Image 1 (cartoon, rainbow, N blue to C red):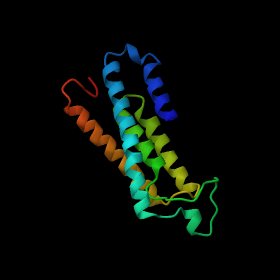
Image 2 (cartoon, rainbow, N blue to C red):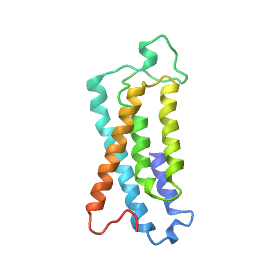
Image 3 (cartoon, rainbow, N blue to C red):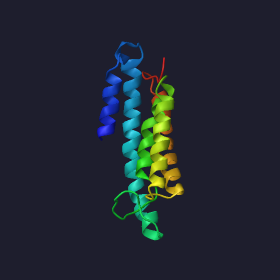
Image 4 (tube, rainbow, N blue to C red):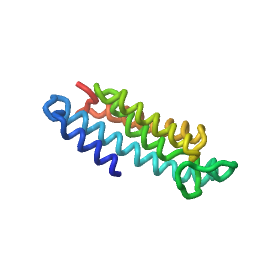
Length: 149
């Protein structure tokens, strides 16, 4: 939740409010990002319990680089949240490359640290991206809302 609040504050500052599309578009994108991340978390919870896949450090002879409690691995909540938060902002100049790199690094770190399999991260990333694109589509259908002007 702290990351969501930081994104909102960043959109409120740094002179973005002087741009003609700011109040309408970036706040709408904030809403899509936040709702996509929350829905992703709610969607992943029953899926992870249903599939009940253990983390790599629980099933194989390896140690995790981070201390982590045992639990379900599929899909990755971190990847879901990262990509759900990033996708709405790929249309905003100056945001896309930095945010995509950060999301990819976060996803890779989950594999590198032994907390997730590659398929866990892919499933999480696709879930987050899918929810964000659905949110952007719904946003585009609303008559008083535009993503960019």
